Image (tube, rainbow, N blue to C red; front, side, top):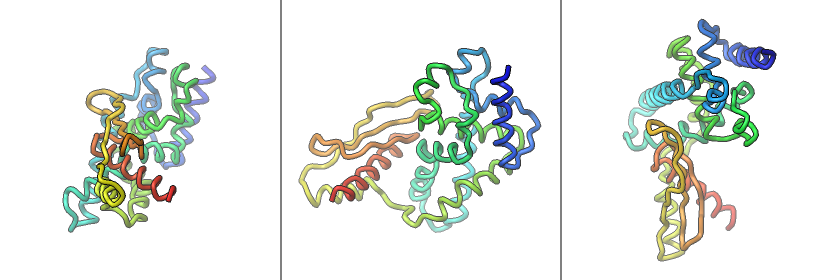
Length: 233
């Protein structure tokens, strides 16, 4: 019981730091419960909340971009959202909010470093937003994103870069062979998969990317490759 109480305190501390007054504390406990812990202890996991939070996060960021950049195309807005709503970004948000400190994982997942795994932290962030929405409404979710996500969007100027095109141009200036993108892994339930893609040129792996879609993962892989190529120059 002491461990449960201690973790409750961690969750309450996180809620307090975000000025969240909870109505149903149990929904937050569920948000912090990974499937591995759920299986071992017979409690509900955060998977359904993750599903809900994913949709809410997409909607709020899409709405923000739509109004902030009225002259941009649908394709460009989608690219921006993919950069700031992806496994890598979401895991960073979870860490900033210290959600990992209250993350309940099964024994095996804990031993494998689950509290630092990008995919698990990304899912945790989405589940947390789902819980906030159900308990406090969409305005409270927006309040969190206004402090956490929107400033990151506003601080960047290279929004509309097509990294795949840039990488192709770079490679073609050096070689006649084009790059190839290969899907190496997909994880998660059918409605919310995470894809890992590598980009290869002349049998050499140039970069790796992770995303909620194959296109997003390919863009991340191309960006990773360009960064590495620039470093190795």
